[in-house]
Image 1 (cartoon, rainbow, N blue to C red):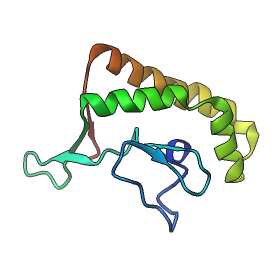
Image 2: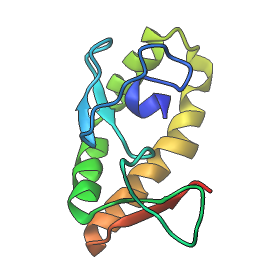
Image 3: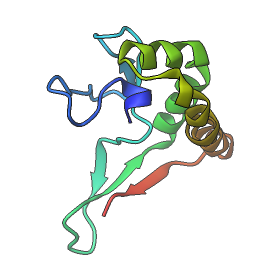
Image 4: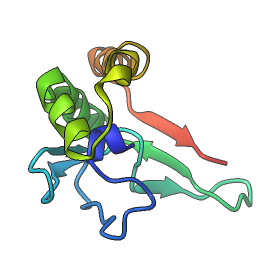
Length: 117
C-alpha cells in the first residue's frame, strides 16, 4: 500500500481521500488506491464486507498506475528513506504484476472484488 499511496497503516497522518486517484500532500506524488477500496457490500453475515472497485474506478486506477513512472516510485521510496537495494524486487514482483492485472481488467471491462476476510 505504501508504494502506491505514500502512507502505511502506522502513519499518524494516514487519511486517504475518497477518490481512487488523488495526490499525497507530503510528497506531492499520486495516491493510487489499487489495494484499498472504499465501496463495500455486506454478505453472508460476515464481519467484513466484500470490497470492490467499479469498472470506472478500475480504469482510473489502471491509467494512474500506467502513468506512475519508475522515477516517481523511486522518489517516493527515497523520500521515506528506503534503501535502493530492494527497489528492483519491488518493481519486478509487486508493481509490474499489479499494473498488468489492472490493465487486463480494464481491457476486459471488468470491475474487481477484494475480499479481506
